[in-house]
Image (cartoon, rainbow, N blue to C red; front, top):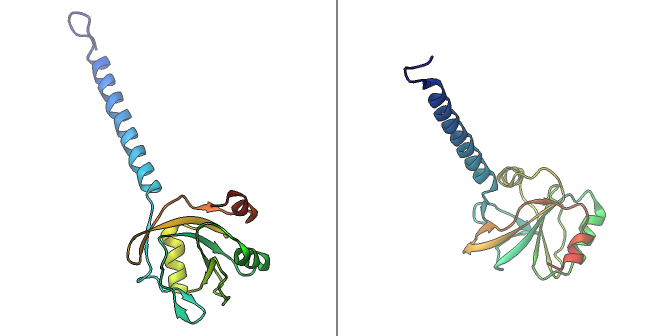
Length: 160
């Protein structure tokens, strides 16, 4: 389709379509990248966790959250003996009762709470680790990406 004067409408429309197509792809990428990197909140008034027989009420400004399996005996003992700069909330997938140590609070919950927690933070393996920071009262915001913790010795070396 050539017009008089040798100019083509095809090249202008192709250029505009390419520009808008690229803009739409970039916009969709930016939106989904933002949504997946968005950190989540946890309100301990809505998520009932127990330490032994008492309901857990957070008192510190920051915590390290470790989601782990008590079926791995050495993991529980290592968590109990970790000495880090931040307190640890160790949430057990199997909800086994364990006494707290100096720096680690062992938490357990009902099935519904566990499922909501796993779904909210998109946890795919145990042990997993992330940080939370107080926003106000019992509302905490995730303060790091969730990582799979392959080796608890990594935590000792980092001295978080």
